[in-house]
Length: 574
Image (cartoon, rainbow, N blue to C red; front, side, top):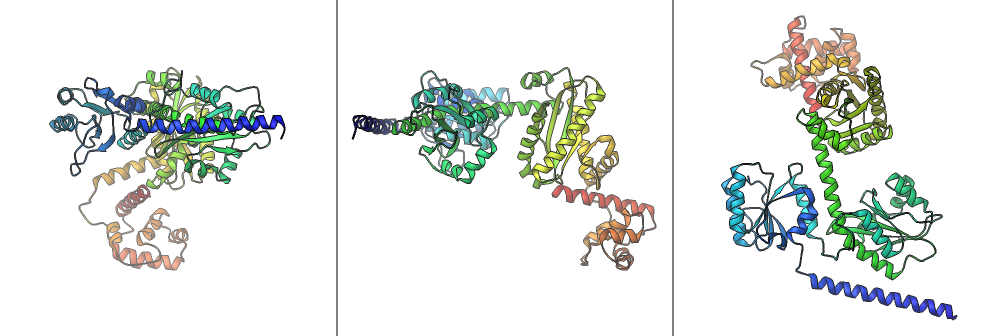
Protein backbone atom coordinates (compact mmCIF):
# COMPACT_ATOMS: atom_id res chain seq x y z
CA UNK A 1 0.00 0.00 0.00
CA UNK A 2 1.38 3.41 -0.98
CA UNK A 3 1.90 6.23 1.49
CA UNK A 4 -0.91 8.22 -0.15
CA UNK A 5 -3.35 5.33 0.19
CA UNK A 6 -2.37 4.85 3.84
CA UNK A 7 -2.96 8.55 4.52
CA UNK A 8 -6.37 8.48 2.82
CA UNK A 9 -7.38 5.34 4.75
CA UNK A 10 -6.33 6.97 8.03
CA UNK A 11 -8.34 10.11 7.22
CA UNK A 12 -11.44 8.04 6.39
CA UNK A 13 -11.12 6.09 9.62
CA UNK A 14 -10.78 9.36 11.52
CA UNK A 15 -13.89 10.82 9.90
CA UNK A 16 -15.85 7.65 10.64
CA UNK A 17 -14.74 7.78 14.29
CA UNK A 18 -15.75 11.45 14.51
CA UNK A 19 -19.17 10.68 13.01
CA UNK A 20 -19.68 7.82 15.49
CA UNK A 21 -18.69 10.05 18.41
CA UNK A 22 -21.05 12.78 17.16
CA UNK A 23 -23.92 10.30 16.89
CA UNK A 24 -23.24 9.03 20.44
CA UNK A 25 -23.14 12.59 21.74
CA UNK A 26 -26.40 13.35 19.96
CA UNK A 27 -28.07 10.29 21.49
CA UNK A 28 -26.83 11.33 24.93
CA UNK A 29 -28.08 14.85 24.37
CA UNK A 30 -31.46 13.54 23.28
CA UNK A 31 -31.69 11.45 26.43
CA UNK A 32 -30.86 14.51 28.54
CA UNK A 33 -33.65 16.45 26.83
CA UNK A 34 -36.35 13.87 27.52
CA UNK A 35 -39.05 15.51 29.59
CA UNK A 36 -38.00 19.00 28.51
CA UNK A 37 -40.55 19.25 25.72
CA UNK A 38 -41.68 22.41 23.99
CA UNK A 39 -42.88 25.37 26.00
CA UNK A 40 -46.08 27.24 25.35
CA UNK A 41 -44.08 30.06 23.79
CA UNK A 42 -42.17 27.78 21.40
CA UNK A 43 -45.42 26.06 20.40
CA UNK A 44 -47.15 29.38 19.70
CA UNK A 45 -44.14 30.52 17.70
CA UNK A 46 -44.33 27.43 15.52
CA UNK A 47 -48.10 27.78 15.08
CA UNK A 48 -47.73 31.33 13.81
CA UNK A 49 -51.00 33.10 12.97
CA UNK A 50 -53.10 29.96 13.42
CA UNK A 51 -53.42 30.61 17.16
CA UNK A 52 -54.04 33.99 18.83
CA UNK A 53 -52.84 34.40 22.45
CA UNK A 54 -55.61 35.70 24.69
CA UNK A 55 -54.31 35.95 28.23
CA UNK A 56 -51.06 34.47 29.58
CA UNK A 57 -50.44 34.12 33.29
CA UNK A 58 -47.15 35.56 34.64
CA UNK A 59 -44.44 33.16 33.48
CA UNK A 60 -47.03 31.21 31.52
CA UNK A 61 -45.12 31.49 28.25
CA UNK A 62 -42.36 29.32 29.73
CA UNK A 63 -44.77 26.60 30.85
CA UNK A 64 -43.94 23.19 29.31
CA UNK A 65 -46.64 21.57 27.21
CA UNK A 66 -46.76 17.78 27.38
CA UNK A 67 -49.71 16.83 25.17
CA UNK A 68 -52.74 18.06 23.23
CA UNK A 69 -56.13 17.05 24.66
CA UNK A 70 -59.43 17.58 22.85
CA UNK A 71 -62.20 18.25 25.38
CA UNK A 72 -64.56 15.33 25.94
CA UNK A 73 -66.82 15.30 28.98
CA UNK A 74 -66.79 11.48 28.99
CA UNK A 75 -62.99 11.27 29.10
CA UNK A 76 -60.68 11.97 32.08
CA UNK A 77 -60.13 15.70 32.67
CA UNK A 78 -57.03 17.59 31.60
CA UNK A 79 -53.91 17.11 33.70
CA UNK A 80 -50.58 18.80 34.38
CA UNK A 81 -49.07 20.69 31.40
CA UNK A 82 -51.86 19.73 28.97
CA UNK A 83 -53.06 22.04 26.22
CA UNK A 84 -56.84 21.62 26.28
CA UNK A 85 -58.70 22.19 22.99
CA UNK A 86 -62.24 23.32 23.85
CA UNK A 87 -64.06 22.32 20.66
CA UNK A 88 -67.75 23.17 20.93
CA UNK A 89 -67.44 25.48 23.95
CA UNK A 90 -68.66 29.05 23.40
CA UNK A 91 -65.95 31.31 24.88
CA UNK A 92 -68.59 33.94 25.78
CA UNK A 93 -70.45 31.69 28.21
CA UNK A 94 -70.09 30.97 31.91
CA UNK A 95 -69.27 27.39 30.93
CA UNK A 96 -66.05 28.63 29.31
CA UNK A 97 -64.95 30.45 32.46
CA UNK A 98 -65.71 27.39 34.60
CA UNK A 99 -63.69 25.24 32.18
CA UNK A 100 -60.67 27.55 32.47
CA UNK A 101 -60.85 27.42 36.28
CA UNK A 102 -61.02 23.61 36.26
CA UNK A 103 -58.08 23.49 33.85
CA UNK A 104 -56.10 25.76 36.18
CA UNK A 105 -56.81 23.50 39.15
CA UNK A 106 -55.56 20.49 37.15
CA UNK A 107 -52.34 22.34 36.19
CA UNK A 108 -53.12 22.59 32.47
CA UNK A 109 -50.85 24.93 30.54
CA UNK A 110 -53.57 26.51 28.37
CA UNK A 111 -57.10 26.24 27.01
CA UNK A 112 -57.73 26.87 23.31
CA UNK A 113 -61.15 28.22 22.25
CA UNK A 114 -62.73 29.07 18.92
CA UNK A 115 -62.51 32.71 17.72
CA UNK A 116 -63.90 35.18 20.26
CA UNK A 117 -65.87 38.38 19.76
CA UNK A 118 -65.18 41.52 21.73
CA UNK A 119 -67.37 42.31 24.71
CA UNK A 120 -68.05 41.44 28.31
CA UNK A 121 -67.77 37.70 27.66
CA UNK A 122 -64.16 38.17 26.59
CA UNK A 123 -63.38 40.18 29.73
CA UNK A 124 -64.99 37.54 31.95
CA UNK A 125 -62.88 34.83 30.31
CA UNK A 126 -59.75 36.90 30.90
CA UNK A 127 -60.66 37.27 34.58
CA UNK A 128 -61.15 33.49 34.87
CA UNK A 129 -57.74 32.92 33.26
CA UNK A 130 -56.05 35.31 35.71
CA UNK A 131 -57.72 33.54 38.61
CA UNK A 132 -56.83 30.05 37.35
CA UNK A 133 -53.23 30.86 36.41
CA UNK A 134 -53.58 29.13 33.03
CA UNK A 135 -53.33 30.62 29.55
CA UNK A 136 -56.29 31.27 27.27
CA UNK A 137 -55.76 30.94 23.51
CA UNK A 138 -58.04 31.44 20.52
CA UNK A 139 -58.16 29.83 17.10
CA UNK A 140 -57.76 32.30 14.24
CA UNK A 141 -60.95 33.22 12.37
CA UNK A 142 -59.73 32.13 8.95
CA UNK A 143 -58.80 28.55 9.83
CA UNK A 144 -60.57 25.45 11.18
CA UNK A 145 -60.12 22.94 14.01
CA UNK A 146 -58.52 20.08 12.02
CA UNK A 147 -55.86 22.42 10.65
CA UNK A 148 -55.02 23.99 14.01
CA UNK A 149 -54.96 20.66 15.84
CA UNK A 150 -52.68 19.23 13.14
CA UNK A 151 -50.27 22.16 13.40
CA UNK A 152 -50.12 21.99 17.21
CA UNK A 153 -49.73 18.22 17.21
CA UNK A 154 -46.82 18.52 14.79
CA UNK A 155 -45.31 21.28 16.93
CA UNK A 156 -45.42 19.06 20.01
CA UNK A 157 -43.41 16.42 18.18
CA UNK A 158 -40.55 18.82 17.43
CA UNK A 159 -37.52 17.73 19.42
CA UNK A 160 -35.72 20.71 20.96
CA UNK A 161 -32.59 21.31 18.91
CA UNK A 162 -29.88 23.93 19.20
CA UNK A 163 -30.50 26.86 16.90
CA UNK A 164 -28.30 27.16 13.84
CA UNK A 165 -26.19 30.22 14.47
CA UNK A 166 -27.41 33.30 12.67
CA UNK A 167 -30.57 31.70 11.25
CA UNK A 168 -33.83 33.22 12.54
CA UNK A 169 -36.74 30.84 12.90
CA UNK A 170 -38.39 30.28 9.51
CA UNK A 171 -35.64 31.97 7.45
CA UNK A 172 -35.24 29.14 4.95
CA UNK A 173 -32.76 30.86 2.57
CA UNK A 174 -30.36 31.40 5.50
CA UNK A 175 -31.01 27.83 6.63
CA UNK A 176 -30.09 26.47 3.18
CA UNK A 177 -26.90 28.53 3.18
CA UNK A 178 -25.94 27.31 6.66
CA UNK A 179 -26.53 23.64 5.72
CA UNK A 180 -24.48 24.09 2.54
CA UNK A 181 -21.53 25.39 4.56
CA UNK A 182 -21.86 22.55 7.06
CA UNK A 183 -22.21 19.67 4.59
CA UNK A 184 -20.10 21.08 1.79
CA UNK A 185 -22.47 21.08 -1.19
CA UNK A 186 -25.26 22.97 -2.95
CA UNK A 187 -28.51 22.82 -0.97
CA UNK A 188 -32.13 22.92 -2.10
CA UNK A 189 -35.02 22.75 0.39
CA UNK A 190 -38.31 21.46 -1.05
CA UNK A 191 -41.80 20.75 0.28
CA UNK A 192 -43.48 17.35 -0.05
CA UNK A 193 -44.69 18.20 -3.58
CA UNK A 194 -41.10 19.05 -4.67
CA UNK A 195 -41.80 22.79 -4.78
CA UNK A 196 -38.60 24.71 -4.05
CA UNK A 197 -38.81 26.59 -0.76
CA UNK A 198 -35.22 27.84 -0.59
CA UNK A 199 -31.75 27.19 -1.98
CA UNK A 200 -28.15 28.08 -1.23
CA UNK A 201 -26.23 30.44 -3.55
CA UNK A 202 -25.21 28.87 -6.86
CA UNK A 203 -21.49 28.10 -7.02
CA UNK A 204 -19.15 28.04 -9.98
CA UNK A 205 -19.90 24.42 -10.90
CA UNK A 206 -22.80 24.16 -13.36
CA UNK A 207 -25.43 21.66 -12.22
CA UNK A 208 -28.15 22.01 -14.85
CA UNK A 209 -30.67 19.88 -12.97
CA UNK A 210 -30.39 22.20 -9.96
CA UNK A 211 -30.49 25.35 -12.10
CA UNK A 212 -33.65 24.25 -13.94
CA UNK A 213 -35.17 23.19 -10.63
CA UNK A 214 -34.58 26.63 -9.16
CA UNK A 215 -35.79 28.47 -12.27
CA UNK A 216 -38.95 26.36 -12.50
CA UNK A 217 -39.47 26.31 -8.70
CA UNK A 218 -39.61 22.49 -8.89
CA UNK A 219 -37.61 19.73 -10.64
CA UNK A 220 -38.24 19.29 -14.38
CA UNK A 221 -41.15 16.98 -15.20
CA UNK A 222 -38.94 14.22 -16.64
CA UNK A 223 -36.80 14.32 -13.50
CA UNK A 224 -39.86 13.90 -11.27
CA UNK A 225 -41.09 11.03 -13.47
CA UNK A 226 -37.71 9.29 -13.19
CA UNK A 227 -37.75 9.61 -9.39
CA UNK A 228 -41.34 8.34 -9.19
CA UNK A 229 -40.72 5.39 -11.52
CA UNK A 230 -37.62 4.41 -9.53
CA UNK A 231 -39.68 4.32 -6.32
CA UNK A 232 -37.72 7.19 -4.83
CA UNK A 233 -40.86 9.00 -3.55
CA UNK A 234 -41.85 5.91 -1.57
CA UNK A 235 -38.35 5.35 -0.20
CA UNK A 236 -37.98 8.96 0.91
CA UNK A 237 -41.31 9.09 2.77
CA UNK A 238 -40.64 5.79 4.55
CA UNK A 239 -37.03 6.42 5.54
CA UNK A 240 -35.43 8.32 8.39
CA UNK A 241 -32.00 7.79 6.85
CA UNK A 242 -29.99 9.93 4.46
CA UNK A 243 -30.49 8.65 0.90
CA UNK A 244 -27.81 8.74 -1.77
CA UNK A 245 -28.22 9.13 -5.52
CA UNK A 246 -25.19 8.52 -7.70
CA UNK A 247 -24.04 10.97 -10.33
CA UNK A 248 -25.92 10.63 -13.62
CA UNK A 249 -24.51 12.34 -16.69
CA UNK A 250 -24.05 16.02 -15.90
CA UNK A 251 -25.99 15.70 -12.63
CA UNK A 252 -23.58 15.22 -9.69
CA UNK A 253 -24.22 12.85 -6.79
CA UNK A 254 -26.75 13.93 -4.18
CA UNK A 255 -27.63 13.30 -0.55
CA UNK A 256 -31.29 13.64 0.41
CA UNK A 257 -33.04 13.54 3.76
CA UNK A 258 -36.68 13.89 4.77
CA UNK A 259 -37.67 16.57 7.30
CA UNK A 260 -40.41 15.19 9.51
CA UNK A 261 -42.36 16.48 12.53
CA UNK A 262 -43.48 13.29 14.23
CA UNK A 263 -45.52 11.46 11.58
CA UNK A 264 -46.00 14.59 9.45
CA UNK A 265 -43.54 14.99 6.53
CA UNK A 266 -42.72 18.65 5.99
CA UNK A 267 -40.27 18.54 3.11
CA UNK A 268 -36.79 17.41 2.14
CA UNK A 269 -33.22 18.70 1.95
CA UNK A 270 -31.20 17.96 -1.19
CA UNK A 271 -27.43 18.42 -1.25
CA UNK A 272 -25.57 18.25 -4.58
CA UNK A 273 -21.83 17.63 -4.74
CA UNK A 274 -19.53 20.50 -5.73
CA UNK A 275 -16.16 20.07 -7.37
CA UNK A 276 -14.13 16.89 -6.87
CA UNK A 277 -14.75 16.56 -3.13
CA UNK A 278 -16.66 13.36 -2.29
CA UNK A 279 -20.11 14.01 -0.85
CA UNK A 280 -21.23 10.62 0.47
CA UNK A 281 -19.14 10.37 3.64
CA UNK A 282 -20.16 9.34 7.18
CA UNK A 283 -19.45 12.85 8.44
CA UNK A 284 -21.63 14.47 5.77
CA UNK A 285 -24.44 11.99 6.38
CA UNK A 286 -24.42 12.75 10.09
CA UNK A 287 -24.26 16.49 9.46
CA UNK A 288 -27.29 16.23 7.16
CA UNK A 289 -29.21 14.11 9.68
CA UNK A 290 -28.57 16.75 12.34
CA UNK A 291 -29.57 19.51 9.91
CA UNK A 292 -32.87 17.72 9.21
CA UNK A 293 -33.65 17.63 12.93
CA UNK A 294 -32.80 21.30 13.29
CA UNK A 295 -34.82 22.18 10.19
CA UNK A 296 -38.09 20.79 11.57
CA UNK A 297 -38.94 23.92 13.55
CA UNK A 298 -37.97 26.15 10.60
CA UNK A 299 -40.12 24.28 8.06
CA UNK A 300 -43.06 23.99 10.43
CA UNK A 301 -42.94 27.71 11.19
CA UNK A 302 -42.58 28.55 7.49
CA UNK A 303 -45.49 26.27 6.61
CA UNK A 304 -47.73 27.92 9.21
CA UNK A 305 -46.69 31.36 7.97
CA UNK A 306 -47.32 30.55 4.30
CA UNK A 307 -50.64 28.84 4.97
CA UNK A 308 -51.65 31.78 7.14
CA UNK A 309 -50.82 34.22 4.38
CA UNK A 310 -52.71 32.11 1.83
CA UNK A 311 -55.78 31.95 4.08
CA UNK A 312 -55.69 35.68 4.73
CA UNK A 313 -55.41 36.33 1.00
CA UNK A 314 -58.36 34.02 0.29
CA UNK A 315 -60.43 35.75 2.94
CA UNK A 316 -59.55 39.16 1.48
CA UNK A 317 -60.57 38.03 -2.03
CA UNK A 318 -63.78 36.39 -0.83
CA UNK A 319 -64.63 39.47 1.22
CA UNK A 320 -64.28 41.72 -1.80
CA UNK A 321 -66.22 39.40 -4.11
CA UNK A 322 -68.99 39.19 -1.50
CA UNK A 323 -69.19 42.99 -1.45
CA UNK A 324 -67.90 43.24 2.11
CA UNK A 325 -64.14 43.65 1.65
CA UNK A 326 -61.76 46.45 0.78
CA UNK A 327 -60.43 46.82 -2.75
CA UNK A 328 -57.49 48.86 -1.45
CA UNK A 329 -56.52 46.16 1.05
CA UNK A 330 -56.72 43.45 -1.60
CA UNK A 331 -54.68 45.58 -4.01
CA UNK A 332 -51.96 45.98 -1.36
CA UNK A 333 -51.81 42.20 -0.77
CA UNK A 334 -52.04 40.98 -4.37
CA UNK A 335 -50.75 43.71 -6.67
CA UNK A 336 -54.12 43.94 -8.44
CA UNK A 337 -54.49 47.62 -9.48
CA UNK A 338 -57.37 49.18 -7.53
CA UNK A 339 -58.05 51.93 -10.09
CA UNK A 340 -57.97 49.79 -13.27
CA UNK A 341 -60.56 47.63 -15.00
CA UNK A 342 -61.33 44.15 -13.64
CA UNK A 343 -63.55 41.16 -14.36
CA UNK A 344 -64.44 37.82 -12.78
CA UNK A 345 -64.65 34.38 -14.40
CA UNK A 346 -66.70 31.63 -12.74
CA UNK A 347 -65.26 28.23 -13.72
CA UNK A 348 -67.09 24.94 -13.18
CA UNK A 349 -66.07 21.36 -14.02
CA UNK A 350 -68.53 18.55 -14.71
CA UNK A 351 -72.24 18.85 -13.95
CA UNK A 352 -71.62 20.97 -10.84
CA UNK A 353 -72.67 18.33 -8.33
CA UNK A 354 -71.00 17.21 -5.08
CA UNK A 355 -68.84 14.63 -6.87
CA UNK A 356 -66.82 17.50 -8.34
CA UNK A 357 -65.30 18.34 -4.94
CA UNK A 358 -62.49 15.87 -5.60
CA UNK A 359 -61.46 17.76 -8.72
CA UNK A 360 -61.70 21.23 -7.18
CA UNK A 361 -58.11 21.31 -5.92
CA UNK A 362 -56.80 20.32 -9.35
CA UNK A 363 -59.10 22.89 -10.92
CA UNK A 364 -57.67 25.68 -8.73
CA UNK A 365 -54.07 24.71 -9.55
CA UNK A 366 -54.75 24.32 -13.27
CA UNK A 367 -56.60 27.64 -13.52
CA UNK A 368 -53.84 29.47 -11.62
CA UNK A 369 -51.10 27.99 -13.82
CA UNK A 370 -53.01 28.81 -17.00
CA UNK A 371 -53.63 32.44 -16.04
CA UNK A 372 -50.07 32.94 -14.80
CA UNK A 373 -48.65 31.37 -17.96
CA UNK A 374 -50.57 33.89 -20.07
CA UNK A 375 -49.22 36.78 -18.02
CA UNK A 376 -52.56 37.68 -16.43
CA UNK A 377 -52.70 39.65 -13.18
CA UNK A 378 -55.12 37.36 -11.37
CA UNK A 379 -56.17 35.65 -8.16
CA UNK A 380 -57.86 32.22 -8.14
CA UNK A 381 -60.07 31.10 -5.23
CA UNK A 382 -62.32 28.03 -4.73
CA UNK A 383 -66.08 28.47 -5.05
CA UNK A 384 -69.18 26.33 -4.58
CA UNK A 385 -69.23 25.29 -8.25
CA UNK A 386 -65.49 25.28 -8.93
CA UNK A 387 -63.26 28.37 -8.86
CA UNK A 388 -63.50 32.12 -9.29
CA UNK A 389 -60.80 33.95 -11.23
CA UNK A 390 -60.44 37.67 -10.44
CA UNK A 391 -58.65 39.47 -13.28
CA UNK A 392 -57.14 42.91 -12.78
CA UNK A 393 -55.14 45.44 -14.73
CA UNK A 394 -57.30 45.12 -17.86
CA UNK A 395 -57.03 47.51 -20.81
CA UNK A 396 -58.42 51.03 -20.43
CA UNK A 397 -60.48 50.59 -23.60
CA UNK A 398 -63.68 48.67 -22.57
CA UNK A 399 -63.93 46.80 -25.88
CA UNK A 400 -60.34 45.57 -25.70
CA UNK A 401 -60.75 44.57 -22.06
CA UNK A 402 -63.95 42.66 -22.87
CA UNK A 403 -62.26 40.89 -25.79
CA UNK A 404 -59.26 39.89 -23.66
CA UNK A 405 -61.47 38.43 -20.92
CA UNK A 406 -63.46 36.45 -23.49
CA UNK A 407 -60.32 35.01 -25.09
CA UNK A 408 -58.97 33.96 -21.69
CA UNK A 409 -62.29 32.30 -20.81
CA UNK A 410 -62.25 30.30 -24.04
CA UNK A 411 -58.65 29.14 -23.57
CA UNK A 412 -59.39 28.24 -19.93
CA UNK A 413 -62.35 26.05 -20.92
CA UNK A 414 -60.39 24.24 -23.65
CA UNK A 415 -57.14 23.71 -21.75
CA UNK A 416 -58.67 22.74 -18.40
CA UNK A 417 -61.08 20.31 -20.09
CA UNK A 418 -58.07 18.64 -21.73
CA UNK A 419 -56.04 18.51 -18.51
CA UNK A 420 -58.80 17.33 -16.17
CA UNK A 421 -60.74 15.08 -18.51
CA UNK A 422 -63.96 16.88 -17.53
CA UNK A 423 -66.16 19.32 -19.39
CA UNK A 424 -65.15 22.74 -18.06
CA UNK A 425 -67.46 25.71 -18.55
CA UNK A 426 -66.75 29.35 -17.84
CA UNK A 427 -69.22 32.09 -16.98
CA UNK A 428 -67.80 35.46 -18.04
CA UNK A 429 -68.52 38.41 -15.75
CA UNK A 430 -68.98 41.89 -17.14
CA UNK A 431 -65.90 44.12 -17.12
CA UNK A 432 -65.94 46.79 -14.38
CA UNK A 433 -64.15 50.13 -14.32
CA UNK A 434 -62.42 49.59 -10.96
CA UNK A 435 -61.48 46.76 -8.61
CA UNK A 436 -64.28 47.65 -6.21
CA UNK A 437 -66.70 46.67 -8.99
CA UNK A 438 -65.60 43.02 -8.69
CA UNK A 439 -68.76 41.96 -6.74
CA UNK A 440 -71.01 42.94 -9.68
CA UNK A 441 -68.75 41.14 -12.15
CA UNK A 442 -68.78 38.08 -9.90
CA UNK A 443 -72.63 38.21 -9.81
CA UNK A 444 -72.96 38.17 -13.59
CA UNK A 445 -70.26 35.49 -13.93
CA UNK A 446 -72.06 33.20 -11.46
CA UNK A 447 -75.38 33.76 -13.25
CA UNK A 448 -73.76 32.91 -16.57
CA UNK A 449 -72.18 29.72 -15.22
CA UNK A 450 -75.52 28.71 -13.71
CA UNK A 451 -77.13 29.12 -17.11
CA UNK A 452 -74.36 27.10 -18.77
CA UNK A 453 -74.70 24.26 -16.26
CA UNK A 454 -78.51 24.30 -16.47
CA UNK A 455 -78.89 24.59 -20.22
CA UNK A 456 -79.25 21.42 -22.26
CA UNK A 457 -77.18 22.40 -25.29
CA UNK A 458 -75.30 25.36 -23.91
CA UNK A 459 -71.78 26.31 -25.10
CA UNK A 460 -68.75 26.06 -22.83
CA UNK A 461 -68.27 29.82 -22.45
CA UNK A 462 -70.90 32.56 -22.19
CA UNK A 463 -71.81 35.92 -20.74
CA UNK A 464 -75.08 36.22 -18.87
CA UNK A 465 -76.91 37.82 -21.78
CA UNK A 466 -76.02 34.89 -24.03
CA UNK A 467 -77.71 32.34 -21.75
CA UNK A 468 -80.52 34.59 -20.48
CA UNK A 469 -83.27 32.01 -21.16
CA UNK A 470 -81.48 29.32 -19.12
CA UNK A 471 -80.76 31.80 -16.31
CA UNK A 472 -84.42 32.84 -16.15
CA UNK A 473 -85.61 29.22 -16.17
CA UNK A 474 -83.14 28.40 -13.40
CA UNK A 475 -84.57 31.27 -11.37
CA UNK A 476 -88.10 29.92 -11.83
CA UNK A 477 -86.95 26.40 -10.92
CA UNK A 478 -85.31 27.62 -7.73
CA UNK A 479 -88.46 29.54 -6.82
CA UNK A 480 -90.58 26.42 -7.35
CA UNK A 481 -88.20 24.37 -5.25
CA UNK A 482 -88.41 26.96 -2.48
CA UNK A 483 -92.19 26.48 -2.46
CA UNK A 484 -91.55 22.84 -1.48
CA UNK A 485 -94.74 20.79 -1.13
CA UNK A 486 -97.57 21.46 -3.60
CA UNK A 487 -101.11 21.50 -2.10
CA UNK A 488 -102.46 19.06 -4.71
CA UNK A 489 -101.41 16.05 -6.74
CA UNK A 490 -100.38 16.81 -10.29
CA UNK A 491 -99.84 14.59 -13.34
CA UNK A 492 -96.06 14.68 -12.83
CA UNK A 493 -96.27 13.70 -9.15
CA UNK A 494 -98.59 10.81 -10.10
CA UNK A 495 -96.06 9.59 -12.68
CA UNK A 496 -93.24 9.79 -10.14
CA UNK A 497 -95.28 7.73 -7.69
CA UNK A 498 -96.17 5.13 -10.34
CA UNK A 499 -94.80 1.64 -9.70
CA UNK A 500 -95.06 0.60 -13.37
CA UNK A 501 -91.71 -0.46 -14.78
CA UNK A 502 -90.84 0.39 -18.37
CA UNK A 503 -87.76 0.55 -20.54
CA UNK A 504 -88.01 4.34 -20.48
CA UNK A 505 -89.27 6.08 -17.29
CA UNK A 506 -92.74 7.52 -17.73
CA UNK A 507 -91.60 11.06 -16.82
CA UNK A 508 -89.02 10.86 -19.62
CA UNK A 509 -91.74 9.78 -22.03
CA UNK A 510 -93.80 12.83 -21.09
CA UNK A 511 -90.75 15.11 -21.08
CA UNK A 512 -89.76 14.12 -24.61
CA UNK A 513 -93.25 14.98 -25.87
CA UNK A 514 -93.14 18.42 -24.21
CA UNK A 515 -89.59 19.11 -25.43
CA UNK A 516 -90.45 18.34 -29.07
CA UNK A 517 -93.53 20.69 -29.38
CA UNK A 518 -96.01 17.82 -29.47
CA UNK A 519 -94.33 15.85 -32.28
CA UNK A 520 -94.43 12.20 -31.29
CA UNK A 521 -92.11 11.07 -34.09
CA UNK A 522 -89.28 13.39 -32.97
CA UNK A 523 -89.91 12.53 -29.31
CA UNK A 524 -89.58 8.81 -30.11
CA UNK A 525 -86.36 9.47 -32.02
CA UNK A 526 -84.96 11.48 -29.09
CA UNK A 527 -85.57 8.53 -26.74
CA UNK A 528 -84.37 5.94 -29.23
CA UNK A 529 -87.60 3.90 -29.33
CA UNK A 530 -89.97 2.89 -32.10
CA UNK A 531 -92.60 5.46 -32.99
CA UNK A 532 -95.49 3.03 -32.46
CA UNK A 533 -94.09 1.96 -29.09
CA UNK A 534 -93.68 5.56 -28.01
CA UNK A 535 -97.17 6.61 -29.14
CA UNK A 536 -98.78 3.67 -27.32
CA UNK A 537 -96.85 4.34 -24.12
CA UNK A 538 -97.71 8.06 -24.19
CA UNK A 539 -101.40 7.70 -25.04
CA UNK A 540 -102.26 4.53 -23.14
CA UNK A 541 -99.91 4.62 -20.13
CA UNK A 542 -98.74 8.17 -19.40
CA UNK A 543 -102.11 9.84 -20.03
CA UNK A 544 -104.07 7.15 -18.18
CA UNK A 545 -101.83 7.03 -15.07
CA UNK A 546 -101.15 10.75 -14.80
CA UNK A 547 -104.52 12.14 -15.91
CA UNK A 548 -102.80 14.90 -17.93
CA UNK A 549 -104.69 16.68 -20.71
CA UNK A 550 -102.03 17.11 -23.39
CA UNK A 551 -104.26 19.60 -25.25
CA UNK A 552 -104.45 21.95 -22.23
CA UNK A 553 -101.64 24.62 -22.41
CA UNK A 554 -101.79 25.22 -18.66
CA UNK A 555 -101.31 21.51 -17.96
CA UNK A 556 -98.35 21.36 -20.37
CA UNK A 557 -96.76 24.47 -18.78
CA UNK A 558 -97.10 23.09 -15.23
CA UNK A 559 -95.65 19.73 -16.29
CA UNK A 560 -92.72 21.42 -18.02
CA UNK A 561 -91.94 23.50 -14.94
CA UNK A 562 -92.10 20.46 -12.64
CA UNK A 563 -89.88 18.41 -14.94
CA UNK A 564 -87.48 21.36 -15.05
CA UNK A 565 -87.33 21.37 -11.26
CA UNK A 566 -86.79 17.59 -11.22
CA UNK A 567 -83.89 17.90 -13.65
CA UNK A 568 -82.38 20.67 -11.53
CA UNK A 569 -82.57 18.53 -8.38
CA UNK A 570 -80.91 15.59 -10.14
CA UNK A 571 -78.08 17.85 -11.36
CA UNK A 572 -77.52 19.25 -7.85
CA UNK A 573 -77.35 15.76 -6.37
CA UNK A 574 -74.87 14.64 -9.01
